[in-house]
Length: 373
Image (tube, rainbow, N blue to C red; front, side):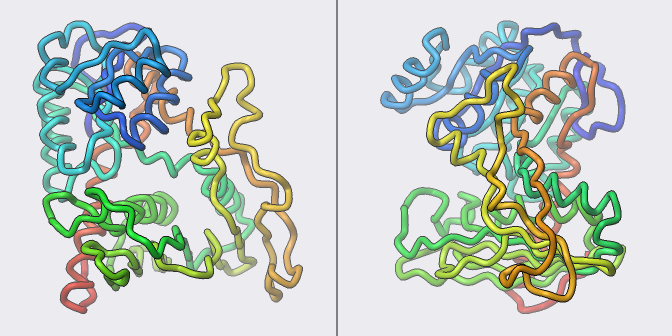
């Protein structure tokens, strides 16, 4: 039995049995580096069709997955919906809502890359449609399975930091030259810029850790010559429980700060560096069944430190082993949800709550106000 858009009630859709046949829409960075390899590595899922108009990407997909079928447009999938069990949408942001709606109307469960939509209202409309049809609607928020995030969640749950009162989180890069493409477009229809790109991850992680937002303040700047979309953004969230999250997304940071700096009543946790899974996937490495303990592991010199009273840069605190990152766990959970043995790992309503914050941040930066949710 399929799951639901909200994940709050059992699905009412058709019973599906593994292996679940997946149609993947989009074979750019998201589709080829993240989704296709993770789908192929997941027991119970099989990559059936890749949708891309680009001849080079079609050839790439066939080279990497010789048995995969190729389609030039999503409409081809709806014409043979009975041959598929799941649609994964990894196409440009502006296409997420119309393709997800078409897939759900064709009776197919859906995974959508973040952001699921440009507005929280659109996300909730999709969730309502999925619930109405009794179909799974899940959002690919892979950073919930980053090694540092998993480690921080464990430290908080075990009380090692005491009562957390400040959470600092950064996705910072030094990219002074523009790369081009829709992600850097200033056209609002493209849903580009760092606020909706890296900000989707930053906000989602903060809400998972500390719950709903009460107020949002943001600064969003276009710094690079020729840039059209925000490339240096700061978001301050005051959560309803009083925790304050300070989130940074930037392509113009010449000296990178810590990925996490989390301060509590007993101790703080500081962690530098990025989870290794994206780099591994970009380099062609793949998670292999039976060797899960080797995936997502980082060397000891990159471990974060927990302590108080002294900076970790001068040796303060105690190194804490970083838990392995587990991106494959997302699609394993999707397969379980499809078979009726597990819950939707990331619901559309959770994504809508993050979009509430992102929309508030956009308004705050534009009007120079603090927004109450």
